[in-house]
Image 1 (cartoon, rainbow, N blue to C red):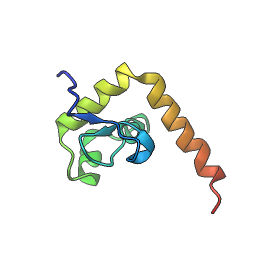
Image 2: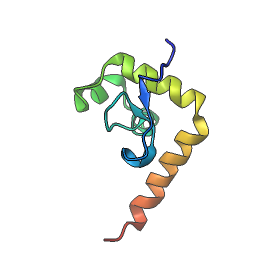
Image 3: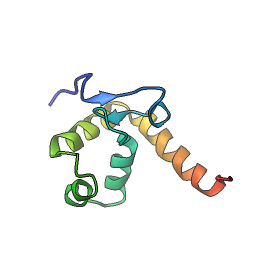
Image 4: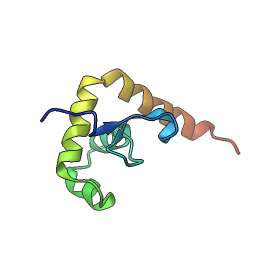
Length: 86
């Protein structure tokens, strides 16, 4: 599968500019992190009913081609979780 511009979107006003699946607010790094934490496709697809197996494949391809971006986003999320203050 080849990732097309319409499959992955990056917009400054959506999810902090993170790459998302199609026009959703589901960041690629979230899907990649689920996989890193050991989740298979089935529970992810149950949690995000709008996603398809092809979406998960596109996320994997995008992450493989943009490893530093995805690693940085996961790291920022992990660092920010402990330091969030209202």
